Length: 165
Image (tube, rainbow, N blue to C red; front, side):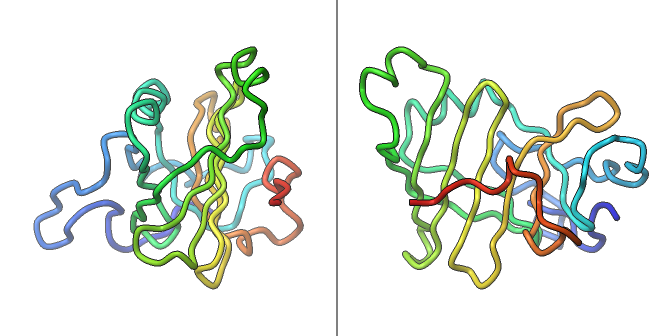
């Protein structure tokens, strides 16, 4: 259980210069011993810290977002409002946002992204295997795990099984 080994996510492995967006900070030491966390965790994952304030600011001024994938790469998505909330509800609950994303590499890869008081959640489909990003509390710290859905021995917790329309 824990972080995958190998190359450092979000870097050019020749010179280890960060290529990842400033939103995501790779946490290489998370996951080494998470058996006491009380959470149901995937067997393999990559852990990140997310600057949620910068995320919200970025989404207010941009229609794209780069997401960390479980294979140590990032993929950029062009975003649009998912249309799941009426304008009245969006106004009443400004901290809840829901987006549809299409990969800038191929329109076959799509993402569903939700941001609410519980954090950031995404599900990426169409690349062969579904990948998920979501918050977990490990050692009292909220971290975001990027993992393949198949990394769970059993069904993932309900919070990682959003309804996709």
